[in-house]
Length: 355
Ligand code: ATP
Image 1 (cartoon, helix red, strand yellow):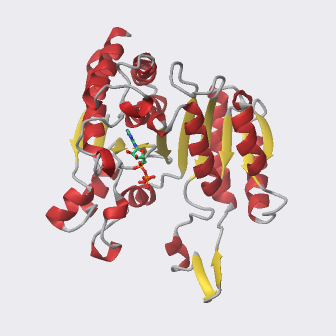
Image 2: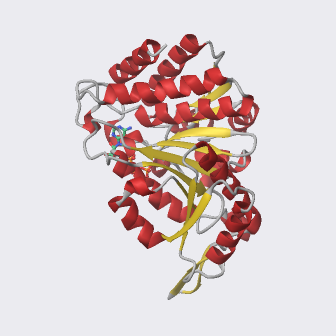
C-alpha cells in the first residue's frame, strides 16, 4: 500500500512521526509492504512556496492508495486568495470522500470512558449546512438584507443513498443496526428526502434493522444509554456534533479516530485540531491519528481482501488499548505523564507482542 503522509501544522509533524513509527513496526510485523511518501503542507509549505497545499501534493494524494493527514492550523492561514488553502476540504473534494466514519467505543482504564459505548457514526461529508458553497456561487449563506441572514441546507437523494449504503454495509459487519438521525417533522423537506432515500436503500438490507431518531433525543440517549446504538447514520452538521459527543463519551477527542472514505480513496485524519498551544513540546497525544491510520489499513484490507491489513489494524487498535490502561504510558491530556514518542514506542512494542 502506498501511503501519502501529510504531516500538517503545529503538533501535526510530531503525531505524524509517532504514527509513522507505529505503522513501520506493523509493516514489519505483518509483512504489509507499506511505502510512505511524505509531503510538506500547511504553513511550512506556505513559507517555502506560497501555498499551504500545492496542486502537486493533491495529485500525489490521488495517485496514492491512501492518505494520512495531520491536523492543519487553519486559523493561522492567510486568506485563500493568498495561498491559505483548506487542506482537508480540498482533498475531500478532489478525492470525493463523501463518508466520514467516526467509531467511538469504551476504552477500559480511561477516565470518564463510558461502558457499553461501541458506535460507528457515518456522517455525510459533502452536503447539508456544510455544503460546498461554490456549488451556489457563494450563496450557501447570505444576507438578503442587513438585518437577515440565510443558510441553505442541501440534500440530494443520490448523496443520501450512497452514504446510506456505507452505513448498511458497516452495520452488516457489526451488530446489524442502523439508526438514522435527523428532525424530520421540523425539516420536513430536507430530512424527509434524506430519510426516504435511506429507507429505500434499507430494502436491499433485510438483515439490518433500521431505526429513526430525532437529533435532540439522540444527543440525550447517546449520553444516557450509550450501549443502545450500533451504526448512527446522519447528515453533515448533525454528524459533526454527534461525533464529538461520542468521542467525549469514549474518553476524549485525543482518542477519536476518523476516516474519510469515497468509492476509490480514503484519508485518515486526527479527530482533533493542531493544538498550537502544546506544539513542539513532545507531549501531544498521537493516539487519534494512530487509530485513524488503523482504520485506513482496515479499509485497504477490505478493499483488497488482504487479511494481513485487517489483522494489523486490529493489532494497532488493541495495542492502543493496552498502552492507555497504564497512566505511566498515557499522555498528559489523558491524565498520564508519557511523551508522544514514549506512547508511540509502547504502542509499537504492543503491536509486535501481539504477533
Ligand atoms: P480546530 O479548530 O483546529 O479543530 P480547536 O481550536 O478546536 O482546533 P484543538 O487544536 O483540537 O482545538 O485543541 C483544543 C485543546 O485540546 C487544546 O488545549 C489542545 O492543546 C488540546 N489537544 C488537541 N489535540 C491534542 C492532542 N493530540 N494531544 C494533547 N492535547 C490535545
